[in-house]
Length: 543
Image (cartoon, rainbow, N blue to C red; front, side, top):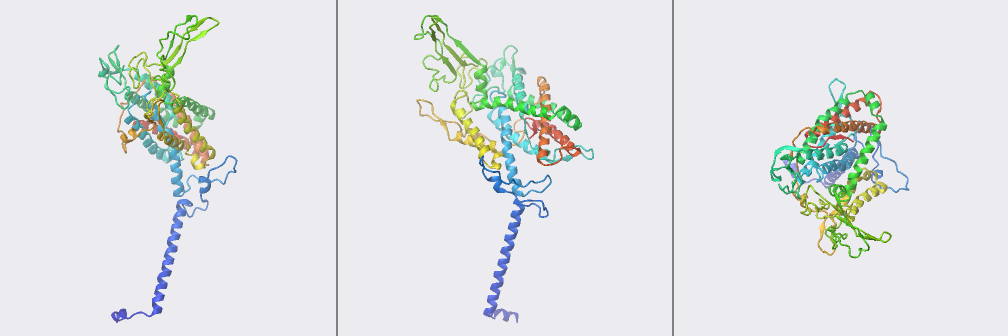
């Protein structure tokens, strides 16, 4: 019977009814898919918890709309409480924004310490330190943000707030000074000539050539090699690890004691002075580089010609290296390296005053590229700027710096709240773009020299890990007390940052809960600083 029924064709009305049934089912399925998609979209953009009645939809228009200085401010986005679930899209966007804001500070410290005027590390080591700083910042920030309890002791590890960790600028001035003194001391390695000193001291480009790039590293008075940059950086890390226990000790002091010892006026002043101290370093890099800037003013030689009675200004017998147009700006081979003031005739005294020549000199580092071979006249320009080698303060360098600074101002004045919170990274990217498409053409030449080359990018590894490069750890006694002071300063900074984070999170800024956050934040700050040094990165601090 079933077989016969299957062979009998259905009447027309049955076929239309079946077709209508399929159509209605498709409509219901489509509506269900749309509802689920809308529910998922609301979950990631509006509400992460359906039962949360306090959650408000995020105002993406306010977040991404540029502003005009004379316009009225729009409605701000909703405030999410400390333990309130955040939509996934909001969390991803805000997390990416925070990461962009952190990059500039994390990258700058390794660039400063590993530079040609400090530890003088290779390009590969410098790239590794930047990567190590970023890796450490991500790992250690998770510890600070996620608060852990020490059993039933009542002590914490971490703040439980948005308190990220990154390499600290507080240690930069002490690190640079300590490494300079350490590299001026003898190591345990015996030597008769510079060829016996195998560690890098000064580099020609990216290569360390014994006897050439480490000229003067062998101390002939003691027949010992001076300490290398790698040893100096390792001594800095080892001393920081020992000094980190001071902050761990301070973290367990009563909060009232810390408040009395470090009131807001002290914390604010310390942070201000650190910023002022770093301003000079920023100006040096703005003008082309800290190496050429320091040597241009600290290692200069002034040559004053003889004075003669009478008017000899037209045929003055000068012995200056600038004779013959060598120092004409942007044209001569000593352009920007040597400054020349011609001889002048003083009519009242009836005397021709001698000419004045001011040049950079490197008596301890002859032959450093692109210097001359003569020790007394060895001069150098700003390198490490792609193929462009110009003197410090050249308009090309200053102009690129203003491109970054101007972009920073424009974003701050006209841009949306989202872009303003990551303006530093965006301004640096824009400046890098300008440098990447720009080139320098010397006068009377058609050759192009690019500010950005792909050599370092092509040679850099695609991925790296911690401890790819290691540095010999040691303790440098003269830096011990200054670094203890640095940890006191970071303690003060951390207290201020945690207080600001608590106020922004609209949680208590007094009482037992807040005291626990301060204690946990300081403990995590000291622990993470010690851990960062073990990971070959400079000490980390809370932001």
